[in-house]
Image 1 (cartoon, rainbow, N blue to C red):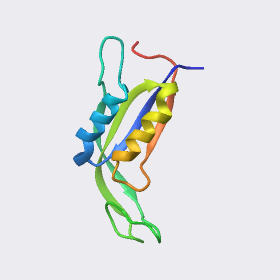
Image 2 (spheres, rainbow, N blue to C red):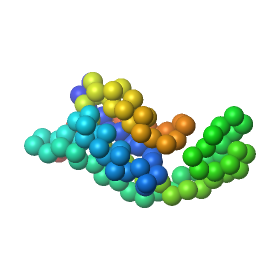
Image 3 (cartoon, rainbow, N blue to C red):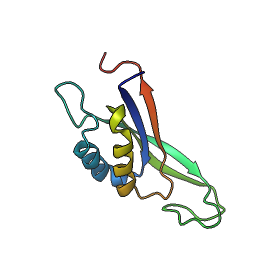
Image 4 (cartoon, rainbow, N blue to C red):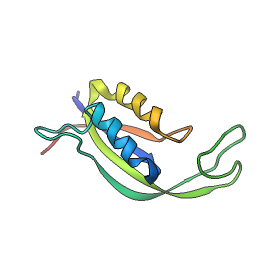
Length: 108
């Protein structure tokens, strides 16, 4: 079993700073003698809001293609639920995509 995982969080660029603050406050991205470490890259996301949704971007029944950021951050596995809960509080999407991926090694 591993002690660490990587979170991939897809978010609009407008919310990067608030996400970064939440991640730092939760001590995500703490690697050795550095903290608040994360990386991000620009991506295109697609989705179709179904009936009963209230999408941040797009319209019900229509496929939406939007610019997003994929934020990647390392965290301790025993903190992942707390961190995901904190991220969801500041994330503008109804159904945010947050992937938690176990890591075999950190900071090689």
